[in-house]
Image 1 (spheres, rainbow, N blue to C red):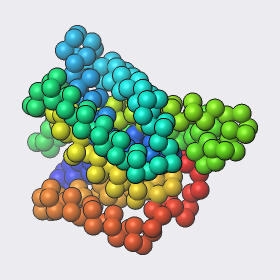
Image 2: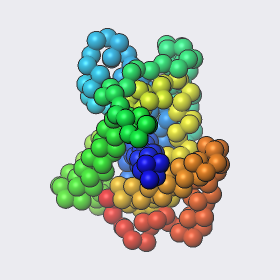
Image 3: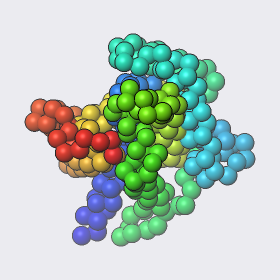
Length: 288
């Protein structure tokens, strides 16, 4: 019974991590249809920012929850203004631009921080349960994940800001005719997606460490999760991550991480074959 409870806790932790890794991409790709191949590097920069800020004496919680998402969000805003804004509607060009940006950010991080794993100590410690140690920090990440999911859904669904964002993404011309500044909405949406990625990197830094090439480990899973989720940015990502994360984690328990990743990918391919528009493609028409 104790082992079953530990397995459930591990399952929840894995689902929360997959949601966090995918959420920033869900905002950018799901709402803007921009294929951001530099998503993994935004996560990486968030991790390095939290480490750098902590080493400078900033409180670890402020570094993780405040400094990292702010810095990466500002960087995202600059990138959108300088590069992405000129490529809307040109998917191949956007892919090439963000791929080049990914290589550039990886190279700069390697030059500045070195090609070695760095990290910070996980706060909160752990508790003992049936002879096993359970990290309280992992449970904190689950709580952050739930807050982001609930908050994101509420903002998109029930606030004027969310209505403006959804309207602009679904029909930019009509939104512009109603006096909505499309350029500003696009910029803030891209910046928000980058900030969420930065927050994810900062949250992962105490657990897995940070290395300049870590982005490649997350970007594929994030894209699979977001595409499988379908039209709904928040609900689709949550449902897709829950399903894929569960299958991947259970398979890992029964075999090894390699087969866990294979099972995750196979499940996504089967789902997209059955539901080409994703899990929520035929259910949700809005972006919430």
